[in-house]
Amino acid sequence: MRLAFAGTPRFAASALAAIHEAGHQIVLVLTQPDRPAGRGMVVQPSAVKKLALAHGLEVDQPASLKPPEAAVRLRAAKPDVMVVAAYGLILPAAVLAIPRLGCINIHASLLPRWRGAAPIERTLLAGDRVTGISLMQMDEGLDTGPILAQTPVAIDERETAGSLHDKLAAIGAREIVTLLERLPGGGLQATPQAQEGACHAAKIRREETWLDWTADALELDRAVRAFDPAPGARARLNGADLKIRAAHVTEGSGEPGRVLAAGPEGIAVACGRGALHIEELQRAGARRMSAAAFLAGFRVHPGDRFAL
Image 1 (cartoon, rainbow, N blue to C red):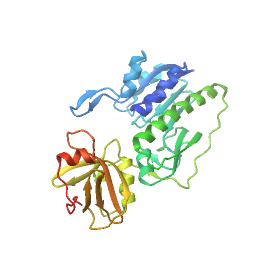
Image 2: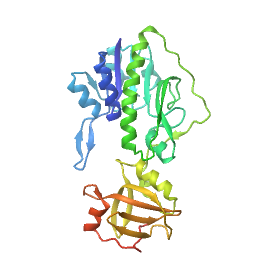
Image 3: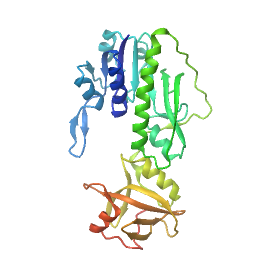
Protein backbone atom coordinates (compact mmCIF):
# COMPACT_ATOMS: atom_id res chain seq x y z
CA MET A 1 0.00 0.00 0.00
CA ARG A 2 0.93 3.63 -0.48
CA LEU A 3 0.78 5.35 2.89
CA ALA A 4 0.73 9.03 3.90
CA PHE A 5 1.44 10.19 7.45
CA ALA A 6 0.35 13.35 9.28
CA GLY A 7 1.77 14.27 12.68
CA THR A 8 3.93 16.79 14.50
CA PRO A 9 5.34 16.07 18.02
CA ARG A 10 7.32 13.19 19.56
CA PHE A 11 4.16 11.15 20.10
CA ALA A 12 3.63 11.11 16.34
CA ALA A 13 7.30 10.53 15.56
CA SER A 14 7.18 7.25 17.51
CA ALA A 15 4.42 5.99 15.20
CA LEU A 16 6.18 7.19 12.05
CA ALA A 17 9.39 5.44 13.11
CA ALA A 18 7.55 2.16 13.71
CA ILE A 19 5.69 2.36 10.39
CA HIS A 20 8.92 3.05 8.51
CA GLU A 21 10.75 0.23 10.30
CA ALA A 22 7.93 -2.15 9.37
CA GLY A 23 8.74 -1.49 5.71
CA HIS A 24 5.63 0.37 4.59
CA GLN A 25 5.85 2.64 1.55
CA ILE A 26 5.48 6.16 2.96
CA VAL A 27 4.79 8.45 0.01
CA LEU A 28 4.30 11.74 1.89
CA VAL A 29 4.66 13.10 5.42
CA LEU A 30 2.57 16.08 6.53
CA THR A 31 3.67 18.08 9.57
CA GLN A 32 3.13 21.58 10.88
CA PRO A 33 5.38 24.45 9.78
CA ASP A 34 8.66 25.05 11.63
CA ARG A 35 8.10 27.22 14.72
CA PRO A 36 10.14 29.00 17.42
CA ALA A 37 10.85 26.77 20.41
CA GLY A 38 13.08 26.52 23.46
CA ARG A 39 14.51 29.25 25.68
CA GLY A 40 16.07 31.02 22.70
CA MET A 41 12.87 30.77 20.63
CA VAL A 42 14.89 29.52 17.67
CA VAL A 43 12.80 28.29 14.72
CA GLN A 44 12.93 24.49 14.73
CA PRO A 45 11.42 21.65 12.70
CA SER A 46 8.96 19.30 14.36
CA ALA A 47 10.02 15.90 15.68
CA VAL A 48 8.18 14.30 12.76
CA LYS A 49 9.96 16.44 10.17
CA LYS A 50 13.37 15.65 11.65
CA LEU A 51 12.65 11.93 11.50
CA ALA A 52 11.15 12.08 8.01
CA LEU A 53 14.13 13.94 6.57
CA ALA A 54 16.55 11.56 8.28
CA HIS A 55 14.89 8.71 6.36
CA GLY A 56 14.69 10.60 3.07
CA LEU A 57 10.89 10.90 3.11
CA GLU A 58 9.04 13.63 1.24
CA VAL A 59 7.68 16.30 3.61
CA ASP A 60 4.93 18.90 3.16
CA GLN A 61 4.17 21.62 5.75
CA PRO A 62 0.95 23.47 4.90
CA ALA A 63 -0.18 26.02 7.49
CA SER A 64 -3.77 24.85 6.90
CA LEU A 65 -5.47 22.13 4.87
CA LYS A 66 -8.66 24.11 4.33
CA PRO A 67 -7.65 25.86 1.05
CA PRO A 68 -8.03 23.42 -1.89
CA GLU A 69 -4.48 24.13 -3.05
CA ALA A 70 -3.04 23.03 0.32
CA ALA A 71 -3.68 19.36 -0.46
CA VAL A 72 -2.21 19.32 -3.98
CA ARG A 73 0.83 17.26 -2.98
CA LEU A 74 -1.28 14.85 -0.95
CA ARG A 75 -3.56 14.23 -3.94
CA ALA A 76 -0.58 13.77 -6.22
CA ALA A 77 0.89 11.19 -3.84
CA LYS A 78 -2.26 9.04 -4.22
CA PRO A 79 -2.06 7.32 -0.83
CA ASP A 80 -4.18 4.27 -0.13
CA VAL A 81 -4.45 5.28 3.53
CA MET A 82 -3.24 8.11 5.77
CA VAL A 83 -2.19 7.63 9.39
CA VAL A 84 -2.73 10.69 11.60
CA ALA A 85 -1.21 11.22 15.07
CA ALA A 86 -1.24 14.49 17.00
CA TYR A 87 -1.08 16.47 13.75
CA GLY A 88 -2.66 19.62 15.17
CA LEU A 89 -4.50 20.72 12.01
CA ILE A 90 -8.13 20.10 11.07
CA LEU A 91 -8.62 17.69 8.18
CA PRO A 92 -11.61 18.89 6.08
CA ALA A 93 -13.90 16.42 4.34
CA ALA A 94 -12.11 16.89 1.02
CA VAL A 95 -8.81 15.78 2.59
CA LEU A 96 -10.35 12.87 4.49
CA ALA A 97 -11.67 11.57 1.15
CA ILE A 98 -8.29 11.55 -0.63
CA PRO A 99 -6.92 8.20 0.65
CA ARG A 100 -8.77 5.22 -0.84
CA LEU A 101 -9.09 3.58 2.59
CA GLY A 102 -9.57 6.81 4.53
CA CYS A 103 -7.60 8.27 7.45
CA ILE A 104 -6.76 6.41 10.66
CA ASN A 105 -6.07 8.41 13.82
CA ILE A 106 -3.94 7.31 16.78
CA HIS A 107 -5.51 8.92 19.85
CA ALA A 108 -4.13 8.84 23.41
CA SER A 109 -7.31 7.95 25.32
CA LEU A 110 -10.07 5.37 25.40
CA LEU A 111 -12.61 7.19 23.26
CA PRO A 112 -15.18 8.60 23.70
CA ARG A 113 -13.49 9.76 26.92
CA TRP A 114 -11.17 12.72 26.41
CA ARG A 115 -11.75 13.72 22.82
CA GLY A 116 -9.57 16.69 21.93
CA ALA A 117 -6.10 18.19 22.18
CA ALA A 118 -4.89 17.27 25.69
CA PRO A 119 -6.11 13.77 26.60
CA ILE A 120 -3.02 12.83 28.63
CA GLU A 121 -3.10 15.93 30.84
CA ARG A 122 -6.88 15.77 31.29
CA THR A 123 -6.90 12.12 32.30
CA LEU A 124 -4.33 12.83 35.04
CA LEU A 125 -6.12 15.95 36.25
CA ALA A 126 -9.32 13.91 36.54
CA GLY A 127 -7.63 11.16 38.54
CA ASP A 128 -8.51 8.43 36.03
CA ARG A 129 -7.00 5.04 36.81
CA VAL A 130 -7.16 3.68 33.26
CA THR A 131 -6.55 5.25 29.86
CA GLY A 132 -5.32 3.80 26.59
CA ILE A 133 -4.85 4.07 22.85
CA SER A 134 -7.69 4.27 20.35
CA LEU A 135 -7.24 3.67 16.62
CA MET A 136 -10.10 5.49 14.94
CA GLN A 137 -11.43 5.85 11.40
CA MET A 138 -11.56 9.62 11.07
CA ASP A 139 -14.68 11.60 10.21
CA GLU A 140 -15.34 15.34 10.22
CA GLY A 141 -16.03 15.48 13.97
CA LEU A 142 -13.55 16.01 16.78
CA ASP A 143 -12.36 12.47 17.55
CA THR A 144 -15.87 11.14 16.90
CA GLY A 145 -15.15 8.50 14.25
CA PRO A 146 -15.77 4.77 14.64
CA ILE A 147 -13.22 2.71 16.59
CA LEU A 148 -10.99 0.19 14.82
CA ALA A 149 -9.05 -0.98 17.89
CA GLN A 150 -8.44 0.01 21.51
CA THR A 151 -5.74 -0.92 24.03
CA PRO A 152 -6.35 -0.12 27.72
CA VAL A 153 -3.42 1.08 29.83
CA ALA A 154 -3.33 1.26 33.63
CA ILE A 155 -2.19 4.58 35.10
CA ASP A 156 0.47 4.24 37.79
CA GLU A 157 -0.11 6.00 41.10
CA ARG A 158 2.76 8.46 40.52
CA GLU A 159 2.30 8.74 36.76
CA THR A 160 3.30 12.04 35.15
CA ALA A 161 2.29 13.40 31.77
CA GLY A 162 5.81 12.62 30.58
CA SER A 163 5.84 9.00 31.66
CA LEU A 164 2.30 8.38 30.42
CA HIS A 165 3.09 10.05 27.08
CA ASP A 166 6.04 7.74 26.48
CA LYS A 167 4.04 4.67 27.48
CA LEU A 168 1.12 5.54 25.18
CA ALA A 169 3.38 6.59 22.30
CA ALA A 170 5.09 3.19 22.32
CA ILE A 171 1.77 1.34 22.46
CA GLY A 172 0.26 3.50 19.71
CA ALA A 173 3.26 2.83 17.47
CA ARG A 174 3.00 -0.90 18.03
CA GLU A 175 -0.76 -1.06 17.52
CA ILE A 176 -0.84 0.98 14.30
CA VAL A 177 1.73 -1.36 12.73
CA THR A 178 -0.40 -4.35 13.74
CA LEU A 179 -3.51 -2.74 12.25
CA LEU A 180 -1.78 -1.81 8.99
CA GLU A 181 -0.74 -5.43 8.54
CA ARG A 182 -4.43 -6.40 8.54
CA LEU A 183 -5.62 -3.53 6.35
CA PRO A 184 -4.87 -4.91 2.85
CA GLY A 185 -7.08 -7.94 3.51
CA GLY A 186 -10.02 -5.71 4.40
CA GLY A 187 -10.53 -7.52 7.68
CA LEU A 188 -11.13 -4.40 9.78
CA GLN A 189 -14.42 -3.69 11.48
CA ALA A 190 -15.18 -0.24 12.86
CA THR A 191 -17.49 0.18 15.84
CA PRO A 192 -19.39 3.46 16.31
CA GLN A 193 -18.40 5.31 19.46
CA ALA A 194 -20.77 5.28 22.39
CA GLN A 195 -22.18 8.67 23.31
CA GLU A 196 -22.23 7.89 27.01
CA GLY A 197 -19.07 9.01 28.76
CA ALA A 198 -17.94 11.40 26.03
CA CYS A 199 -15.96 14.39 27.30
CA HIS A 200 -13.68 17.06 25.88
CA ALA A 201 -9.93 17.29 26.52
CA ALA A 202 -9.47 21.00 25.93
CA LYS A 203 -5.99 22.38 25.31
CA ILE A 204 -4.25 23.37 28.56
CA ARG A 205 -4.46 27.13 29.15
CA ARG A 206 -1.62 28.97 30.87
CA GLU A 207 -3.90 30.20 33.66
CA GLU A 208 -4.78 26.59 34.55
CA THR A 209 -1.18 25.85 35.43
CA TRP A 210 -1.17 28.18 38.49
CA LEU A 211 -1.75 26.07 41.60
CA ASP A 212 -4.83 27.06 43.58
CA TRP A 213 -3.85 26.45 47.19
CA THR A 214 -7.48 26.60 48.31
CA ALA A 215 -8.05 23.30 46.47
CA ASP A 216 -7.70 19.81 47.91
CA ALA A 217 -4.06 18.67 48.14
CA LEU A 218 -5.02 15.63 46.06
CA GLU A 219 -6.06 17.91 43.18
CA LEU A 220 -2.80 19.84 43.39
CA ASP A 221 -0.80 16.62 43.36
CA ARG A 222 -2.63 15.61 40.16
CA ALA A 223 -1.92 19.02 38.63
CA VAL A 224 1.81 18.80 39.36
CA ARG A 225 1.97 15.40 37.66
CA ALA A 226 -0.31 16.42 34.76
CA PHE A 227 1.87 19.44 33.92
CA ASP A 228 5.20 17.62 34.19
CA PRO A 229 7.37 18.05 32.16
CA ALA A 230 5.46 20.79 30.31
CA PRO A 231 4.22 23.40 30.84
CA GLY A 232 4.95 22.90 34.56
CA ALA A 233 2.73 23.63 37.57
CA ARG A 234 3.29 27.25 38.56
CA ALA A 235 3.36 28.98 41.95
CA ARG A 236 4.65 32.25 43.41
CA LEU A 237 6.49 32.54 46.72
CA ASN A 238 8.15 35.61 48.21
CA GLY A 239 7.97 37.40 44.86
CA ALA A 240 9.55 34.59 42.84
CA ASP A 241 7.77 32.63 40.11
CA LEU A 242 8.40 28.92 40.51
CA LYS A 243 7.51 25.65 38.85
CA ILE A 244 6.62 22.81 41.19
CA ARG A 245 8.17 19.77 39.56
CA ALA A 246 7.43 16.94 41.99
CA ALA A 247 5.23 16.70 45.08
CA HIS A 248 2.96 14.40 47.02
CA VAL A 249 0.06 14.65 49.44
CA THR A 250 0.94 14.78 53.13
CA GLU A 251 -0.76 15.39 56.45
CA GLY A 252 -1.16 18.92 57.70
CA SER A 253 -3.57 21.83 57.89
CA GLY A 254 -3.51 25.58 57.98
CA GLU A 255 -4.27 28.66 55.96
CA PRO A 256 -4.15 27.72 52.25
CA GLY A 257 -0.74 28.52 50.76
CA ARG A 258 0.98 28.81 54.14
CA VAL A 259 4.34 27.04 54.49
CA LEU A 260 4.06 24.53 57.33
CA ALA A 261 7.63 23.22 57.20
CA ALA A 262 10.76 23.73 55.10
CA GLY A 263 13.84 21.56 55.25
CA PRO A 264 16.08 19.15 53.31
CA GLU A 265 13.19 16.68 52.99
CA GLY A 266 10.99 19.24 51.24
CA ILE A 267 8.50 22.06 51.72
CA ALA A 268 5.07 21.33 53.20
CA VAL A 269 2.32 23.74 52.16
CA ALA A 270 -1.22 23.89 53.57
CA CYS A 271 -4.02 23.46 51.06
CA GLY A 272 -7.79 23.84 51.23
CA ARG A 273 -7.76 20.28 52.48
CA GLY A 274 -4.59 18.50 53.57
CA ALA A 275 -1.11 19.63 52.58
CA LEU A 276 1.27 19.28 49.66
CA HIS A 277 4.86 18.16 50.24
CA ILE A 278 7.05 19.71 47.52
CA GLU A 279 10.06 17.60 46.54
CA GLU A 280 11.43 19.38 43.44
CA LEU A 281 11.19 22.97 42.19
CA GLN A 282 12.51 25.21 39.43
CA ARG A 283 13.09 28.96 39.34
CA ALA A 284 12.69 30.89 36.09
CA GLY A 285 15.80 30.40 33.97
CA ALA A 286 17.25 27.78 36.32
CA ARG A 287 17.42 24.02 36.26
CA ARG A 288 15.09 21.66 38.04
CA MET A 289 16.39 20.85 41.52
CA SER A 290 15.57 19.07 44.75
CA ALA A 291 13.94 21.00 47.56
CA ALA A 292 17.20 20.72 49.54
CA ALA A 293 19.22 22.31 46.72
CA PHE A 294 16.55 24.97 46.20
CA LEU A 295 16.52 25.92 49.89
CA ALA A 296 20.31 26.30 49.85
CA GLY A 297 19.91 29.37 47.67
CA PHE A 298 16.38 30.57 48.44
CA ARG A 299 15.18 31.27 51.95
CA VAL A 300 11.85 29.75 52.89
CA HIS A 301 10.52 29.71 56.45
CA PRO A 302 7.45 28.24 58.12
CA GLY A 303 4.78 30.92 58.00
CA ASP A 304 5.75 32.18 54.52
CA ARG A 305 2.85 32.05 52.13
CA PHE A 306 2.47 31.10 48.50
CA ALA A 307 0.34 33.57 46.53
CA LEU A 308 -3.22 32.42 45.94
